[in-house]
Image 1 (cartoon, helix red, strand yellow):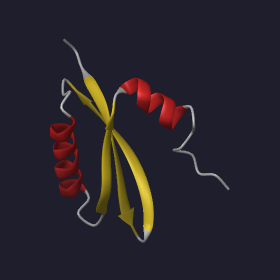
Image 2 (cartoon, helix red, strand yellow):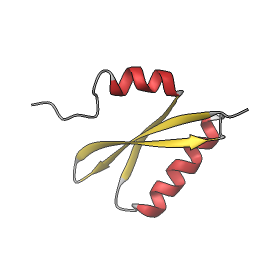
Image 3 (cartoon, one colour):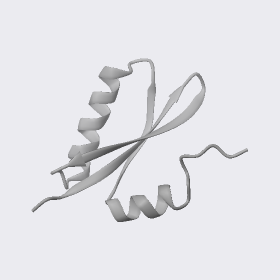
Length: 75
């Protein structure tokens, strides 16, 4: 069975909060996916502080982040 989820990570850099999304295929266990993403992010961007991470299935993620446009900067 093909399963995937999206891990959203919030991190701090230069006293600003940023958000990134990572797709994890063939990994339906949230804790494992978050561990992999956070470890990878720490190695790739050591100057950033990871503040939070959350898993969503694709349908919930689409409703929360794309339909509500959370990724866009609002004036």
